[in-house]
View 1 (tube, rainbow over the protein chains, first blue to last red):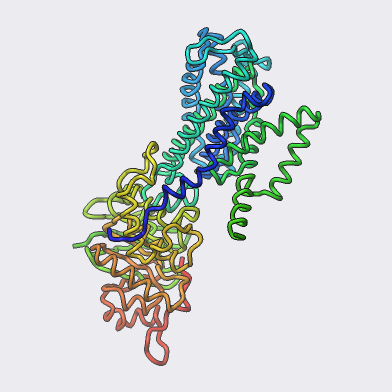
View 2: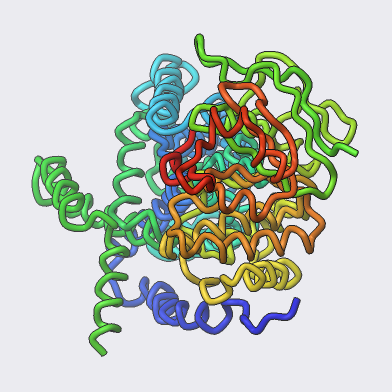
Length: 330
Length: 263
């Protein structure tokens, strides 16, 4: 084809990624410069970020708002707990492998039903199905421990058995383990959303009829996106379980799905990094709100209202807007 | 030889027989115009043939294959593509992305999730080639939702064209476009499809456009085909002129502005 138009990409993409290096450096040295409590909070934030990244493949890229992602997060966490209780396994890699498998199976089952619908019907269906899992965990207490939940021990990491020093494990070794998992998950998701498949999902999000008329089989693509999304959130659940030490029905209930929605919207679901920023910001917000007042939900509610009114495109949307204004002013 | 033929194709919406046992055929390589007043059943016919709507009865034969029960996906694979009356694009993707998606789809690459889309030079070169031909290369990196209406109409056709169809339905390719812009758009579209050897069915209300660009005209009225012939035959067909076109004192066809909507 004779055309002078260059393919957009490399340079501008590299420039866009210029901020990654300093952030990566900060994340790498964090345990050496901040106190263990901060490292722990950051670990929780990174785990939530993996879950939110998975969730946003559906919301931001496929245009489906799931209110049932607690199901996959819970599935990941309970898989770790079951593996320890019934199989006497205490290896983080096996926990992760198991959670990938289980969350894949559950998301295939749920997805098969849910992707036939869109908008509010999709949201309600995902919510209803996740509540089924919650009630199972709640009622079958002889298997699941009921409302008490199940204990998850500190596992071996990459074959190295857990150290006796819990502080060293939580605030140092496990932090780097989660950071590694976070980097891998982020890279994987980056590739997925920038692949031809990712473009096809965005096409479905923008205009499903047209997508169908360029030969994209919408349901199949939505199902695949649903499963990938479920697996990512399941992995987040498995990483969360040893840190929390307990898998309980709290993480299967629909309000927990709401938290995943909240953090993604907080960060901005229109951008790739939005959910990551939102998840970390939400984790800090919640941690400090809980410490600050017993009415922490009130505080979060207020933040949500302000967010919707003042920053409808989330933190990253606002950052982009300000950056564009500064660029114009120059 | 007919590329597409419908046999007694019918579709009703309640009591309204939108398409009433229609036998409609399209010959290989022609540019055919499908005309008729609002509610004549033109768009419904295209919706039936492209697979957007299931027919109540009748058959659709494409290249001697019965495609009546096939999904729209299978028909696209077989070579039937369409554009839309109301512009139907992926507004949050760039114009290049819009066209490239059709090419990825045609190559069966849209299920690839472990390679970056931007790395596929073959697809992007072709996408930019298509944009170039449609005069849209300057808009390549712009979002499809941010370009002018005339450019959007062209991009809508380009997205369908990039599927390399054998039969292309263009549902009002110049609707909502100023009179001045209509001819340039039609010039671009018809020269591209002719060069590509694509058979085209154009639904259009503007009679100037219809008579100037089509080789054959099929007139629909209240769900049935009223007339079928060359532009000259249609111009001199009394049934058509009285029920549809109407004449103003100068004797020229005066349809168009009054019928710019459509179903």
